[in-house]
Image 1: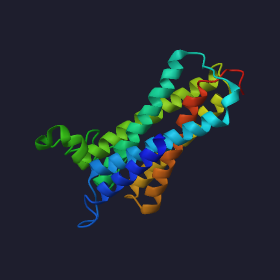
Image 2 (image 1 turned 30 degrees about the horizontal axis):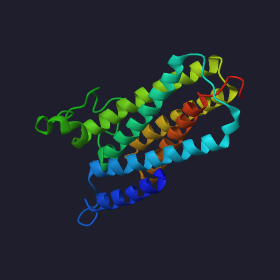
Image 3 (image 1 turned 180 degrees about the vertical axis):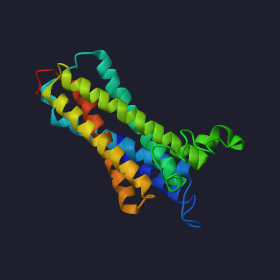
Length: 221
């Protein structure tokens, strides 16, 4: 029941997003773009989780060795979502076309122009320089967390399926980081930009699988 409602809401939100700009200019409100992406990610997540439930309903549930690992997987999944939403602000503000260097931005850790006082709390969402810096920081932190959890999962007494899923997630996030840096250095060519977005969905999908499989018995291979 929730999926048809969400699909209708997504359509309405898409119209609301387009009405914010494409009729008179070539960009849209970054807030509406991010909301539209967030709804799409929610629908994607629900669909994938439902498929996982239906596909292995009879195998039982299970847990990794440590409750801390379970929480770590969930936190990593949340970080992936937040990082993707921050990327929507980068796209909505065309922030990827400035400071096309890595790892520093204009030779600095915190770039010139990061804070525009007049914007107040909106600085993080309306200042392109801040949007790009925040996305970089979130992406690096999220990647580091996923890679750390991948190593832990490979060494812990968890199911083979979970160990494999965590490994795929680690490889996916490495690919995503490489694509993100390359896309930035080349000033966001369309093909790489789209590929970067698609790989973001791959990272999200693998993390959903990891969180789902972290509920399974160690004997469930």
